[in-house]
Image (cartoon, rainbow, N blue to C red; front, side, top):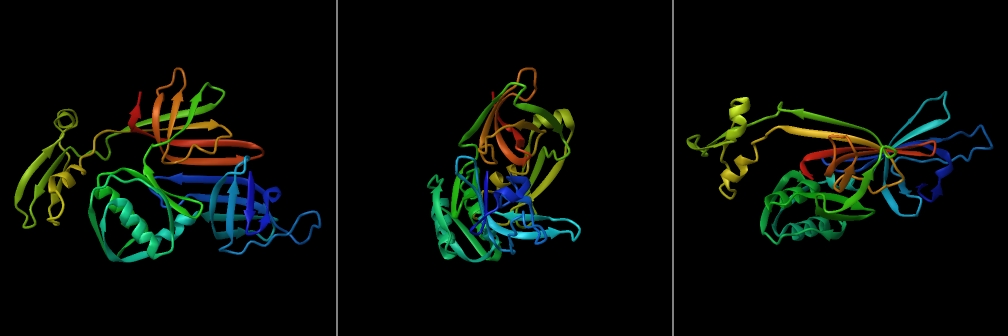
Length: 308
């Protein structure tokens, strides 16, 4: 692994690196500690001000992180400094005032163009949608809304300085086999957030229709939400159906690997004999911990999209 802070190579000064992502957060995060002191001639003294561009490369020289240093922590009694960073998606939180109409890729290109953000591969299904922001939506939310309204489940991410969008799980990151790779696996099933009945009301509060998950109602009883139609441009039944939630099955797996490709938005094939976690899963969160020459990864897996 190679780490640059501006033009300074700090690879030999760093330890305890954590690199992580989550489908519910805009930016990938990077945190690490590095040695800093002006009292020891054997330690190179590198000052890293907030806002410094931090770039991390894997062992083969591929860029894996590019973003600003956002927070710094140091204790006077220690020679270690902790630095927290986010990748360039950090700037997607700027708020927008505009109306956009076109396919999801066209809207993404338009809003990014306004802020000087370069775009790369942009998934698209050609469906024309309209997204309006009077200042309440960020760049990220404009893009996210465009794809959601077009019925696409996508992963929005930065490749260095370039914004890309691909369908969630479009790439297989790795095939994990054997107990020597898989350290641990855990599984959880829950009905805490279940919703199996939705009443649809019009904008005047009058009843229109009831949507049900009859199978869940028979097993777990009725847990109801009410959807009030407010936007005539949207299909009220389609929007109301999004409120129905069934049993949530989640899991995680911990591995030792030198693979930097196991990140949120991709798929992983797990083939561990005797485990309930076996199949092809979407990665919904990831945390890479690199310390003392060992690379450990914990992956949050989406069981809903699991493929045998």
